[in-house]
Length: 538
Image (cartoon, rainbow, N blue to C red; front, top):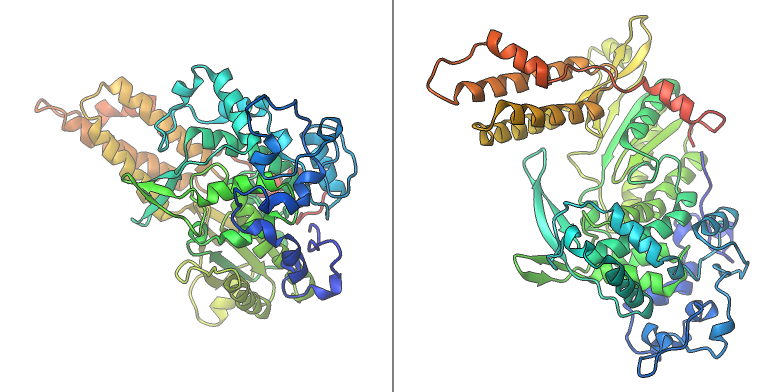
């Protein structure tokens, strides 16, 4: 299923057993960038990764500090004549553009890229600006997308100049809270608009490298991948592989416990451009602003930031993915399937002994990086084609269920009697959505029926687009019926006149509330089509 463990150049494969991806040798080699960057040019005078390959620059204007001095690099006499084509430590020239970066990353798995920032062009910044949500909430700067659009060309040119001269400064994120399905609140960090633009551009560049490295069972926040692909892969693995035990795991407070020093060390396995690494450092150390008070961030990466999903995937790639791939190849005695979406993961095992050992080793692995599994959301259950019969023989009840990406998975049979993994909307998510709709209907009580109906239609159709999977129509039918009841209650409270009955309201409901229908194919159909002529588990 994918590549083996990445090793650092010059490090023997035999010497990397416990921590292959972060050997002591590699850490000592790249440890200088893990520290906070100094503004003293002399401190960075010995950083050769930046001075080997530099951008072609026009002569500095009179009275303006040298670009090399601002960035903390030696000023080379041959600066004007040096080419920017070699992007790696190996000095092998590749074609210009992000396509060349991807090809180099694919062909040379051990290479570290020394020149990446020059790919952050004004055109890329413009594309990043256009990709942002136009109606998103502003950060601490208070600048909205519409306001920044005024004089966009000059603003982007200035931003590009500051990024490349090293004078760009990241602003703290504005902290807000959103309710979770369990009643708790999730903290989100809203970055300033310029920070969003630069982050999006940097993510675009780094994706060309890491999309080649990431494992096939990683689905969260990756281009061309969505939650339904992860669900299909899980479903196909549970039905077609010999799976009898399932580990449903969740890393406790993952985004809040990402250690910055480890994050930078992981990035340095493939990125040797210190200017790019310092950008990431600036975002990690920018802090958060809550009710006008700034607080320092020494650990974690803010949820909601554009760069956070990529950083999370890179972190878990080295902490979990490479380790899990090596574990199932070298230690597991039976079949093992893995599907990870961000910090939520599900692993299936043929043997219980494998499952229990994996859980113990996984906990020890996370502890090395300051992480732990959520005790309430992590369970090892008996699940698979033989779970029902085995539990019946022991006098136990039906097989347990688990929830992943908003769906509760349970063992069942199709019309022909074959084993099938069915999915239905998770009860907590359904209740939370209905509660939100009920509250909004009360707020819109006195609005015209046409406006309320159009809004409800958008809400229901959006809900169907995600949850209308095979076997879930009954739950969606109950969802629509509950919305009809809530809307009926609101309409009957609008005035003291004769209240409308169901016969009068049913045509209104039928007009604005579409009936559920299956919108997604069966998992094996879509998954088989997607992986045709490829390894099934890749």
